[in-house]
Image 1 (tube, rainbow, N blue to C red):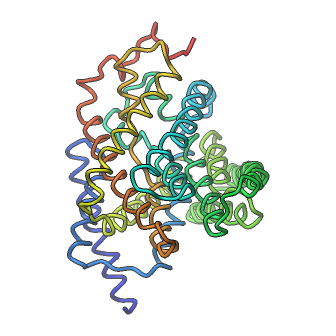
Image 2 (cartoon, rainbow, N blue to C red):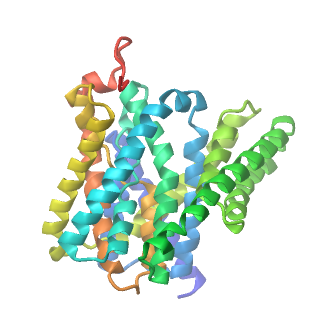
Image 3 (tube, rainbow, N blue to C red):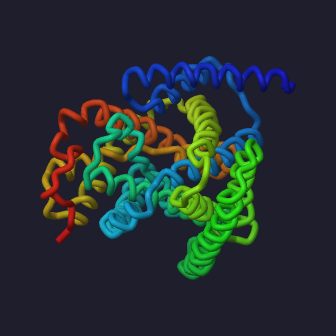
Length: 394
């Protein structure tokens, strides 16, 4: 296929993605469901086809810019305020999800332990902001904790699956082989955060005293990509690096900062449209997965509820339900699934992981869209802050 054909594909995708997003905006709901639905329609008609290299490139750049755009809008003060509660929930949910979902997938679909573990680590990632789009301006401890949790679990959603993939490629299941990944895991965290902090302060120092018009926009975008690539090159976590980079930029006073942020947001939003529509083209609901997959998703929601209950035993039932139902799979999970489709689909049993992941993405986004749409009526005491009310675990 020639270059002109790909450009036409991209133009069509962006046009339909923009129209889908406009529809979602009018309905005051997330655009993700409409983007995936658009992709499913085009996938069924066989009208959109991209080579694996193009998918990998688009997915990686989208990952970098989306994480940066999310992190730079987040207040470190709010992050620190809710970090203990959100960190506790994130850790307990990780342990519960890895343990129970690995066993459940192995039992239901007879996948080996590593593939079951890969699936469990993939569906751990959540993006509550998908369901909370229409709740802008309505803050509470519950909403803030969900936001902080999404910041915490995003890097883990990227790092853990790729560690497991390295074991799958080596066909390593022995405990000694798995334990050997602990040091690289810690190394990824330290190097990733270190690179992000150092480069973040350098870029902030330059932009704070020298606004160069369009060159400042280019500097910010280029620095984001370099931050990710360099961290990965030295065996660090590019995701953590770009998260730290975004947090530092977003919490520093810079002239024309809003203009710079809006420029980055446009690029990340454009790539997000491409990623979700591309993912939708691969999403074909296969009958053999529906029954068992639906039962598995219900079990997943119970695991989430158990995690919330253990983390916050004294909060109200409505809070627990609201936090349990907010499990949409965001751009990070979508990108990993695209990479699995384009690079790892020849591994035996991997297509089952991919199909199940696609099913969970669809279910979780539909559920979160419903929760977000009707959340204002069903969870008034959750999303409307009360001064005397707190989600403290004590």
